Image 1 (cartoon, rainbow, N blue to C red):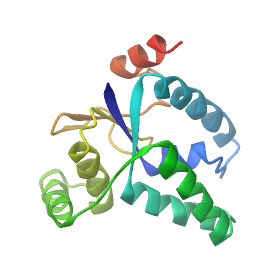
Image 2: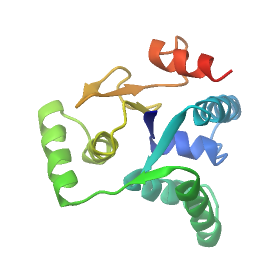
Image 3: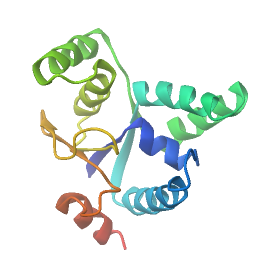
Image 4: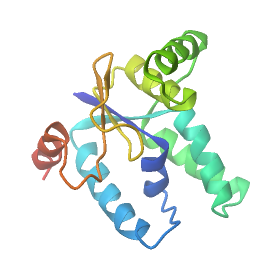
Length: 155
């Protein structure tokens, strides 16, 4: 079964975080895509993405208790991928080699360590590949062929 990592922004849409009028459509699309993928894939929420989600939820007005409850719900619904010292060091290498933000590199590295083939992210470079992991924007106008095939299979 394919393993798919979820970036912070995808988790935020799943949680219903809405910052602009456009986000309502993104929330609906993300929830549909994730629901379909869950039928035939293992979904992974890297620990770094869960931590960032907590901050996003708090900034969006959620209480600490509500933000924690959402993290607990997502950690139970999805597999998780821990960040260890070797993960952080590999992320630093990735950040330096590809001029990435460290925290994005940490999510990429943790997802790759968890055996993910895809990482769903709206704001990382669509199509970027590292260690067998491909970054895919599930909200792009033209869907990535691999993601489109997985979503179509689940219909």
